Length: 353
Image 1: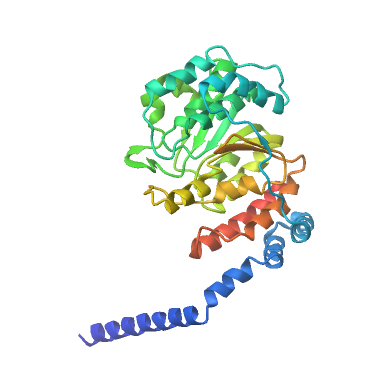
Image 2 (image 1 turned 120 degrees about the vertical axis):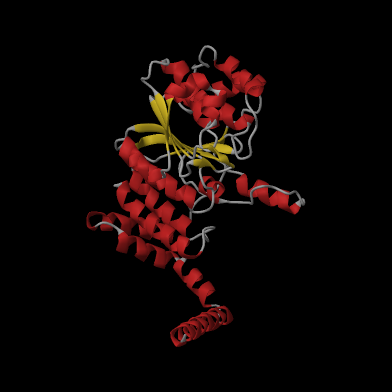
């Protein structure tokens, strides 16, 4: 009985101390001060050098110096929006010219497949809209990579769009495919169904061309792809800053120099903020990770509206100053998760080579 009472008093004292400590931190704004300090460019740069592998520290240091001395540029880059099927052929031609494939046209049956989507699918929250999948289909069709990796499966709709574009270029004999990766076994928008459920339900003919990997994150790419192997990756996972940046840095070693990374929801934050200001009730709040990543991207980029493609530089180490600059922007991931994220970002920089 006495032991139980002593334990109860001990717990009460511990809880009281926690409350006092929390109140003190709030009163003196300690947490805010720490958050501001760790976002200072000099502090971020020192952290990057400290966590870099020994053989990479000089290169990381050079990138850190550049990140402090040179602000990141902004801008929309080139623009090629394809807003309807009626505009698909002309938009395809413009995008092909931008990608150095002038004269290339849609594959046989491509327009017919895209026009069938409205009849065969149900619209789900968070999936790619019409102008987004028209841009995605055109880009994959034009570049015609042998395989594409997607980060963020959700219902599987975008994986099917990519697989269909590959099949029309390479055939459906299994020589080309999509690897789609999601951290959730159950679909994030409907926990009663599995991630990727739309693939067998809506596009059963494409099932052999899509390999689903769950529960996995972007680090899994290093297990299924070789360094500098890939030409196209599609990132459409958690949009909270800095998660899209971390996904990009984790997959970058496997993307060839000059390769393309497609980002979805590059207007997600602005759209969500405007909707909230208008009093609209949405299932998602504004997250700016993908939007900021595209806006501040210092290399070549093409906007398709709410979807865009960024091109990797010839030397991937040129991503270091950009990444460090992005780390100075306040994270939308908070508390201990922010600390974990910061360390993961530092570690990913050393793999850029």
